Image (cartoon, rainbow, N blue to C red; front, side, top):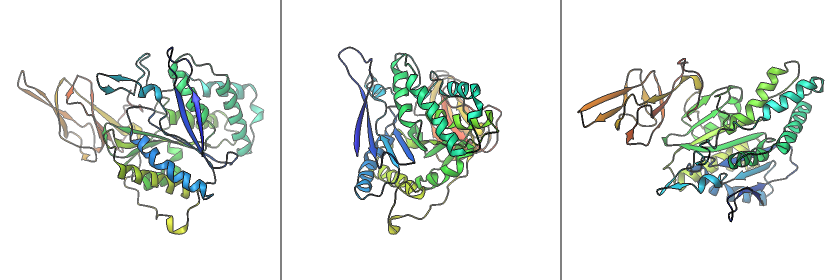
Length: 378
């Protein structure tokens, strides 16, 4: 294993920060796997999984069983880790700019690569691998010339520079109170399905674009969009990128994290990136739930303020019109029911005991397009 420290310059005077990067396997391998944890720095189950994954990868490397380059970033957001307000960590948004750490809105990588290809479209042809190498070369140029304007830009640029040329990107997050669930493109579902099976994911959500420029989408949609811009060329979806939501924030449990780390190793063995003995390979588990479209996701909001009494938990199935929570106003002796808009599966609930009007209370994934568009939460 090689340990690398990527400096985050521009920190406050007298302070330094860096991103710690762990490299496993042959550096010149044809395939590259990138795994990062806790981009939202208050979502720590992924970093606990990384803690248990590291010794597994070290052992596999010592035995010569790692066939691909594997990059693991166990705590990828030192900025968010340093943000504590009134004894509570605040790691989803940068407190200086208000930006979500997982919304890459200031990095025009796709736009700049597209402009270069439009200026010289004949460089693309029928050879898929040649096209992948060419596009990754253009991406490398854009990554190298990008000039961050803030600390958030710098952090995102650092992580993209580690991941843009990966064949597989696994971004480990969690929700507030949730079951295991995953996100990816519909075109990548065949590659996500084995990982979802090994992890025991209870909900899979697919979308070509949520419009949020989340880290996984930033790296995968570039290939889909270019393939549509240049239909005459053979441009594959060369980056399988997924966000894995490792249950809830409070699910910091060694046994769960060990099982998740083992599941990732099983997935890497399934994809040929590590070699396991036959007796160490686990049978493919069943898929717990078929994927649903992001357009079928409903964030159920509080219609008024009040004390929240939840009627459902993550993992429940709900019907249209069913009360998923109550909002209690003890001043005026009013109870307001909060209803589901459609049938679906509750994959997450909010952790707040008091809600302001418009606050998200419950997240439900369903099979039917609700006509609300495809959008992730802020």
